[in-house]
Length: 119
Image 1 (tube, rainbow, N blue to C red):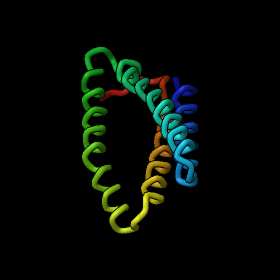
Image 2 (image 1 turned 135 degrees about the vertical axis):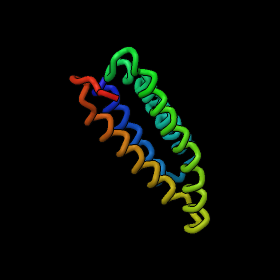
Image 3 (image 1 turned 90 degrees about the vertical axis):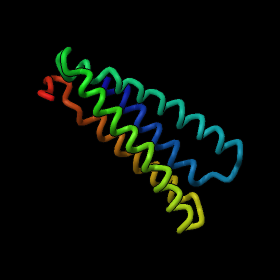
């Protein structure tokens, strides 16, 4: 699982980074499609609660993941709106998403699947 999430993180980050530097609409749509394709692999994260905890606590860890995702869903549009309004361009917004991709990659690689969490 670590390999699939790592590959997804690298290719998502790379596609997003390259997106900031293209001017062709065809290249932009291709890179956006690539980014979303590899980002969909992150759905594997929903198998992690069952892997890292015992059966009775998988729901707690899944709920914590869902809460974090909802907080991100609230904050990211606000952050992107502020970045675009202040800077007047989407370049730094794409760099924010690139940094998020790097965080996704690093987070995916440091998970220790060999031990159960006490949650």
